[in-house]
Length: 281
Image 1 (cartoon, rainbow, N blue to C red):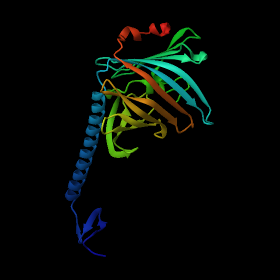
Image 2: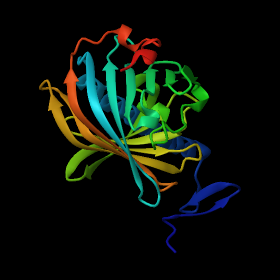
Image 3: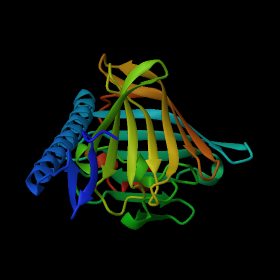
Image 4: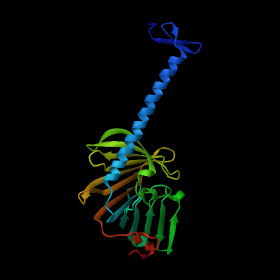
């Protein structure tokens, strides 16, 4: 064995070429290693934040939007049921978006309406109007990880993805379905979230979300959301024709098919107050 390599220690000090290395040398090496690691983490955090902010910047200024939806629920055996919905969305200055979803078919869910106020900080406000009970039910923060109307989308999945709701870490570049993407880990700031983290794929050309993996409170992969067939509107804003959510732990899935997108229709905050839940048609 060559004596030019570090051998066993003497009294706790490594030996190299028959001499003990000083604690000072070891300390300097350790500080350098820790500094390099901290620098790498800081870069990853900054890069992840930059990617998320650029995606948000490109999707700002559309004001309001309406769309038709078809929700297809599929159980573990492959059996399907279909629902028809409508959505209304309002962009809010200096806060999160407001969303209303209205169920039109089948008859047993007709008139059910869901309203969410997303906030940049603090818990979101969410309500569900159940026509059979003729009352509005508030969704508590502790229940927002529950399934939305039997689908694989949780209540919190329907809130707008405000920058301030996560911390970010850039992980890597990756080719996904033939397109270069950024892979970013997002950790929810809200302790009542049902997820420990998301892993999100943004395409590098338009900064559109291509895929999100959701990890449960045990840090195990729970669900994957895939965005398909983007179309551009108003020569700037991209929207998917389909969102496919698969639950890996239950074997169930939900497809949301979007159509009839319309922007800048004149919706106002009055169209999204709690009383409007009872007036939906």
